[in-house]
Every structure is written in C-alpha cells, then in structure tokens.
Amino acid sequence: MRIVMIGTGYVGLVSGACFSDFGHEVVCVDKDAGKIDRLLKGEMPIYEPGLDTLVARNVEAGRLSFTLSLEEAMPGADAVFIAVGTPSRRGDGHADLSYVYAAAEEVAKLIGDYVVVVTKSTVPVGTGAEVEKIIREARPDLVPGDNFSVASNPEFLREGAAISDFKRPDRVVVGAEDEKARDVMRELYRPLFINETPILFTGRTTSELTKYAANAFLATKITFINEIADICEKVGADVQQVAKGIGLDGRIGKKFLHAGPGYGGSCFPKDTLALARTAQSVGAPTRIVEAVVEINDARKRSMAARIADAAGGSLKGKTVAVLGLTFKPNTDDMRDSPALDIVPALQKMGATVKAHDPEGMHEAKKHLPDLTYCSGPYEALEGADAAVLVTEWDAYRALDMDRVSKLMASPVLVDLRNVYTPQIMREAGFTYRSIGRS
Ligand SMILES: NC(=O)c1ccc[n+]([C@@H]2O[C@H](COP(=O)([O-])OP(=O)(O)OC[C@H]3O[C@@H](n4cnc5c(N)ncnc54)[C@H](O)[C@@H]3O)[C@@H](O)[C@H]2O)c1
Image (tube, helix red, strand yellow):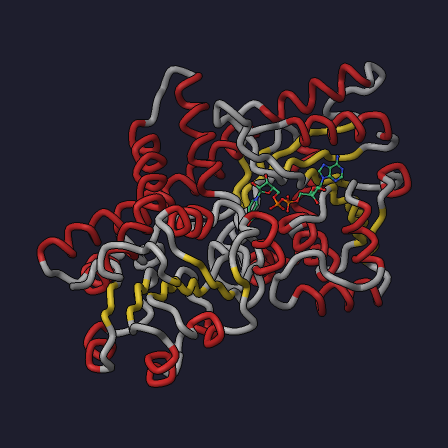
C-alpha cells in the first residue's frame, strides 16, 4: 500500500516509519523545512529510542521518504494520514483544529484516484465529518465513499516506547463509515493480524470519542492515586503499597498508579481539557474530568512549596538542583512538563536553579532560559542546598549518594517519583521527602 503521512512529529514520524517497516511505501510530509532537511540528512528531529535505526533501515530499503511537497507525495496514495498537532485553543481549552483543517484543504485539491483520508491526530467528535465537508466543498466533483472516504484512526502510542506501542498495540481503533475505507484500513494493519491485535471497527464519532475517553480515564487514574498519596502522607501509610494492593485486583490493574507531581506531556493535559469542553458544549458535562484537570493543575503548582518545606521553609538565596525536565523519561518532549511549573515557582521563591536532563535540555532552554544547565547530575548537585528529582530517567536511579551528600551544600532530596527508599536515604544522612510515603 502507499501511504502519505502529513506531519512528522512524535506521532507522524513514528507511525510513518513503522508502517514502512511493515512493508508499505510511505512518504512523510511536513511544512517545517528544518525537520525535513534534518530527516533528509538522516538526523532525527525528535528523541525517541530506536527511531533513528528504524528510519535509516526503511529509507535504505526505499520504502520511506520525506518531502515538503504534498503535491509530490499524493499521486497513487491509498491512504493519507493527518498527524498534525491539535493543541489547546488559547482561551477556551477546546482542541485547536486549524492545522487539521488546513491539511484537509490541501489534500482536497490533490485527490485523484480513490483515497482514504485518515485523522490520526487526536480530534474531537465531529472532526471527521467536518474534514469530509471541507473536501466536498473544495471539490464538488468528488463523491464521498466513491472517490474518497474520511476515517478516524486515533493513535495510542506512548512517547519513549512509541515504536513497540505502534507495532504491538493493545488494540487498533478505526472509525469508518463505508466498507471501502474499512478494506483499506484492514490492509494497512494486516501485519498486526499475526499478533492477533484486536482491530476495532466503529463509526467515526465513536472512534474519535474513544481516544479522549482513554486519555481521560488514564489521567483520572493518575489523579486518583495522587490524591490517595496525599492521604497516605497525612496518616502515615505508603502509597506504593496501596497502589500494589489495589493494582493486583484485575478490575483495577496496576498500571498508571504511580503517584507523582501530576501528569504532564503533550496529550493528557490538553485532551482532558478538550473532552471537558466538548462535554460541556453538548450539554453532558463530565464533572469527573473537570475535577481531574483542576486537581492536576493545582498539584503541579504545589510542588515548589513542598521543596521549600523540605529545605527548611525558605528558598531565598538557596540553590536547587533539578534532575529531569521532560514530562517523562526517554523523550525530549517538554510540553506541559511539571518542570515548567516547578522551576519558575522555585525561582519566584528566590532560588537559583541548576538543572540536568539527559535528552530534554535543548527543548527546555526554549521554555526555561534563566537557569544553569549542567552536563550531568553531579554537576547540578554540586553546592546545592536542595535537590529535586522531577523525571525518573535511568541515569538518576542509582546515584552515588555518598558522593551526592559530599557534593551538596546540604543533603536534602525531594524525590517526586519515589525512586529511592526513605529508610536508606535517611540512613545516608539525607533529609528525604517523597510522594505518599512517610
Ligand atoms: N505525542 C504523543 O505521544 C501522541 C500520542 C497519541 C496521539 N497524539 C496526537 O497526535 C497528534 C500529533 O501529535 P505530535 O505530538 O506528533 O505533534 P507534533 O507537534 O510533534 O507534530 C506535528 C507536526 O505536524 C506538522 N504540520 C502541521 N501542519 C502541517 C501541514 N499542513 N502539512 C504538513 N505538516 C504539518 C508540524 O510541522 C509538526 O512537525 C496530536 O493530535 C496529538 O494529540 C500524540
């Protein structure tokens, strides 16, 4: 099959490369000349483990290519995926669909033979119908279902594990309104039949809502355990044991029960907000998701006070070492990372911040210009009055605590990811605070 992937970001580039690895012929298109330029040179515009080798292998095999020109890419395509950004619309929290609609308009002009236009971006209910309308208005000569179809195929991959998630997903969801589109989508995902991956065919609207419901549920699970962690701190219980105790119940499941500083990233914050807005606008408000959004925002904002408290109350004139800036390990993505709330709040309290992140510092510098970036964790910790572990990168999991204690001006560690053991840290002479563990 021939595939065009519009958008070579975290989703488009991974999806395009994986589809080509399945044996399809994929052309990835982006408007960002810098990204295409780097890809043509064999450089990755994002950090995702394993992506460079996957891309190189498929470019070499002649199945994967990159271009700025949709016009060049479109002829002969069986499917055109729209994998552009859908950020929060400034002001109201609805998803900003301008990139999706702009891509649909560009596609419309270039449709020749039958093609399925697939929204892979996370889009609110009704977007597929709107994309179809845009194409019909731009091209009255085309008949939906005959000359083109519009399908929904939301993506569930996680950054940091994106390739295995794409190639071995728990399920694939396809929303389509006609058999012709379903046939193309079935053929595209045929390589997954070997693993018996469930492929769920639904209507377009159901598929669109499924993606938001999945993200809202996961964000709710995280928020739930974060609130349980707060109770644990008050009563002297251990949130990790509570999480284990409930997670072993098959009805609950053990994933997404890690208490921390609040969820961030490019999806949960904007998608929970967008779902809440959609729900309000259709007259079926979801109070649970609204509460999750509010609780999570407040939690991220409250972390700096926790750090100040561990450091003796005031951060004026003190130096804080921040370990980890990205919203989770194994990505360079800084979008809505808790660090974006924590670092400015620490600075506002009078602290000087030194930070390290294995892959995120280039991206972080765009958002947090006024801090000292260090080449490693020990450099960040040197002379610090307090340290905070924000992202649980492997590089921070086995720090030499003797060395850390000698390097720091005072051994205070706030571990927002519960990487270390309270008793061991206390025995090592640290003032140690974690989440939901006394
Ligand atoms: N990042 C994730 O982990 C993840 C997971 C699942 C779903 N999603 C969803 O996938 C979508 C894309 O997310 P992302 O993180 O890959 O975004 P991104 O910002 O990394 O990438 C989007 C890309 O689209 C390009 N683009 C925009 N308009 C274009 C156009 N008209 N023609 C060509 N290129 C265009 C941009 O230049 C950019 O490179 C979003 O809706 C997101 O919610 C993301």
